[in-house]
Image (cartoon, rainbow, N blue to C red):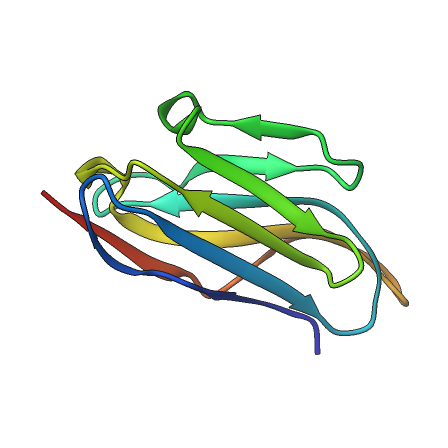
Length: 120
């Protein structure tokens, strides 16, 4: 069974830091683009940051300079280091990945989400 499992969410005060991790497991041959999305109550899910298999990154304007996305291709994991957190960063954060499986391509797999709450 293929899945993405996130960890690392929690409650933090404004200005603090958190690190999220996501691990892909299953009959995976390789992992293409991986990304982090977030969804706050009453808002649409939005891209936070993404990273390709060769390390090219893309960030939402709202998090540039504060968040850093990284990945470990050997372990099929992605991380998100979040610094200088703001109350507006409060959301459920979801991991997303495009995977090459032993049986074919699986595009847009989602994790279950992890809650990040930033108090003012």
